[in-house]
Image 1 (cartoon, rainbow, N blue to C red):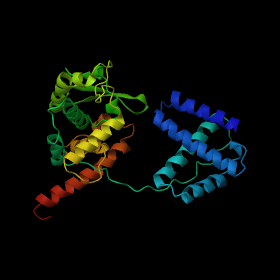
Image 2 (image 1 turned 60 degrees about the horizontal axis):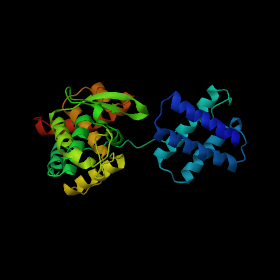
Image 3 (image 1 turned 45 degrees about the vertical axis):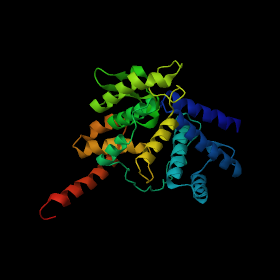
Image 4 (image 1 turned 180 degrees about the vertical axis):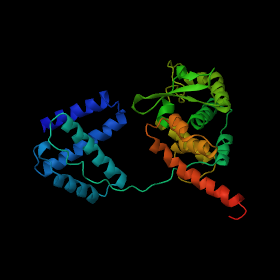
Length: 298
């Protein structure tokens, strides 16, 4: 088992240094591979080189028996496929037993988003008479203006804002950086928060993070989700909602209004165009509504 742990550590270093994966991704890889090591122990497989295609198929069956969601099963098999691919490259194994294992077909779920009228209700529901309210409006305006993730929002520092050019430096997944423009509404809310809200919330804390909590310390992604849930409750919306819907809304509204798909890909920080194309399904639904509403023989 010691040898397995050394190989796993080598793989993690490869993910960190060569693939530049995020810590979240690395933790998932490590968990999935360690789970497979336990399976190897149960099956008395003493070496990764002795893992066969039949063993890989058996492992897939075991995952289904544990009632994992299809998405989780697909991720675990994908993790092991990548692990063995790395081992094959480093000549630690002679074959990749997971290369031919079929991943479960995932249901294609359309991204949930807010309609423009619903976004307006959210904006109007925020009480901006308090420093916290100014902060909450600035968060919502900036997330909707840029389509950034909650984790990206929590990591913004004051120096990341270029107020003169209305551009934000965003540090995304795998520490990849991108510049995203934002508009007048976001700029106005940010300036109001920085000038009239942030200093009061900071108390005696000293740091450069843009968004802070009531104690003056940097606001975490979890803290932003909590704020968002409170906004939803206040706006009187009872459906199941998550902050990522702001990002979905950003992409959907851009495409509905004629934005180029590749431009939206850049703004979202997607490395693959296929990740952005999911939003075209939503816009096709919008186009159908327009067609049915306006075509004389629809």
